[in-house]
Length: 397
Image (cartoon, rainbow, N blue to C red; front, side, top):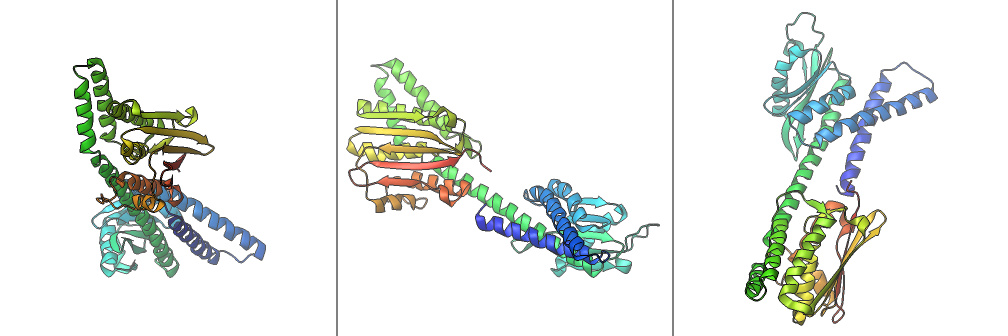
């Protein structure tokens, strides 16, 4: 999540704690200033603690499972006899006594959704006819995501006075904020998956053609080598086209790089030299899927291939405390720094720079997963080769 998103979440939580603690303070017996300050601080802490326990489930979106996990914490925040969480069609979760009112919660929620604002339910509208039922009123507030009503929060109690209405309204806004963040997370995941699919689609048909042509050239002269190259090609394509999560281990990513380099060396022969130097401590570090191989591909395509395939590619991964630092270096022609910036800024589908999409794709995914400060760094100049650096945290929080 971006810094501004976390700031918004923290501000909303603090505001909720302030509102609820002030409401609680207004209903306590008068005390000395020091005792009142201590109790207000304790009430704020308790509120934030309960809100923090409700947040993780809400961050998965509004559904039956998340509502059931969150509803008891929401009731603790409200101090109501019973609390209902609904979508636009049904009650997703209910907590507390007065189950006789559960059947009316959807009707109450729909009224609030139709009005587009919090409502109170009292009198005959709140009565259920059950002997001994203590509920005489309810406060209901809409839950919204991106301006769209998705459900409602309803609190039931002996009365639906102004304090309860204000509290339900503020809590509904906080819940809506969590649901907004859940939608943002889902959109971010969809975007990342789309970027990964785009990167897979960029596996050059020319690379596949060149590999198969190279392998075919060894079938008669060196069938054992041809067999080994076929296995390398199968390993590479299985990894590059696999279905799975956005993250893999650095060890798996480097295995893919090794297979790719073996295939390219079979094509260019001894003219292409490469070394891979890795600290054992970073092999298990989680990294974005296909984050190193595109850098190696660009090093060969923009570096050594332009020199007839002659040159050296060096991949280094070192332990840097809480991070792993990875670099890919070629001793090819290099490029003007402005062109390097253009490669990183290339949009999907933009082929003007002859394959820089891999670089821009990796750069975008690193920033999206870890934050803006984790983008690629290019060091290059005409005639001086190119080094691409990336760093990843060892632990993804």
